[in-house]
Length: 604
Ligand code: ADP
Image (tube, protein in one colour):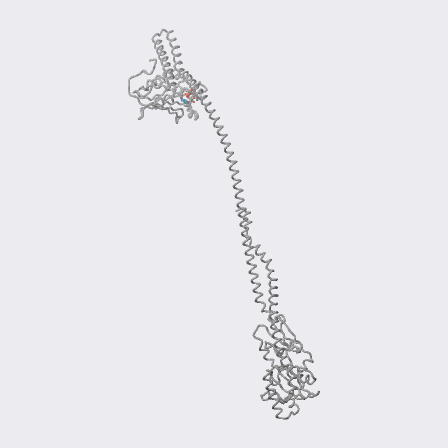
């Protein structure tokens, strides 16, 4: 993977998380909105409940509001007011009030005289009957006496039940002769409130709770009471306590809605715990969070897909570009190779032409070389017999001067033989150049060796070379040609003498021969300087020579090697461990015979 690719492939989840963190504050307004929504829902719902409750309460009160006034005109009650001690009138009034109470559903109805003493009551026959009791201390009494409709909330002094009292004066002309009171039960309006999480709170003009769905709040003051209010409470005893304890409500914990009932001076409140809002708001926030998360995931997924898509496009582009570059490179390489090939073909053709030309030249040079080699060989090989002829001729001259005719004749015979051999050498060389083959014959080695030594005798003696022979007496028969064998031996012996010229006395030449399993082995050893390493490697090459003092053509060993191979033998060159050269001739054994004269000699 390239570093560029690794950068683009780096996961984007971190940036997504950062984005999510940035978007998370969005949940706060969402929470706020949800809170507002659910609050308004709750408020409108509670408003309805409150309205319903207030309507119900007012309905209950209105139902009894006018009753005291109407009842005050009933003749039976008036009769009692006129004769308060009349037992029958009391009985009639009691019955009447009880009947009306039963019909109207009020809690209690009773008739007070002008001083506030109860003359008759609907509960006259009950244990907690009001009859005989004085209620002049109650404000509704004073209100009624003053000509107003008496209204009062209070706890029944005997029943200990909460009730609302309506009172109206009974007049005779303009004179107040009595007061009729109707008490309405309010306890039951409290029980109307079901077991809902919302709470009811009804406070009177003192701010003291008189009706509530929470019993522990009952008769507690929702606000601090003034001294006057406290005194009034003590004097009129509307509550079971003379000193209402404060109700400390946590305003933050409740959602409060209040409605004022002007005619009673009451405040009806509905208190909804704010925790009611928590759950739906939390749900909304959770859903919002989940949605946000899902959105993030979706976004992440989309981003990832987009990145993959872009990466793929980039990768494909890169691959295409690489491919194109490679194609261009390959094309140019191929073109280069093509032109190189064309160049090579051209060079080959030129080389071919040059080769043909060189071959032609070589053929020509070969011809010239062969010609040169042959003429050189002729001059080389004829040198020895020529020198010998000259020597014999000079010697003959001396012999003739001394009239030694027979010796002179012998010399002339030798000269004749030598010219014959020269002719034979020339014939052989010619035949060799023409690649003619002569049949081999059995030749005795010792006479050929003697012959070769004889040609060099004069030179050997002049150089005082000691000849050490180790040859068997019996002739060693080898397969060869007479002339060729003599040529080889002559060359090798002449080389030995040449080598010995470079050395002071004593100069020695060892000759040894023996019959071996394969044939005949002749060793020619001298105590000269021996072959130099270069001469050892190249001595058989034509025209290789190291000779400076004597004139060497470098053909001797080349001719010997060729002749030996033609004879089926071999020539080995070496240096003797004690110094000097050692040349070994290996020849195939020949059939023992009697021939002393070479039959291949054309001069014979
Ligand atoms: P040439 O005699 O004309 O130099 P040859 O072919 O006969 O040519 O010999 C080649 C070389 O081999 C000589 O120049 C000489 O260095 C080396 N060589 C031949 N025979 C001997 C020998 N007996 N001892 C030392 N070196 C020899």
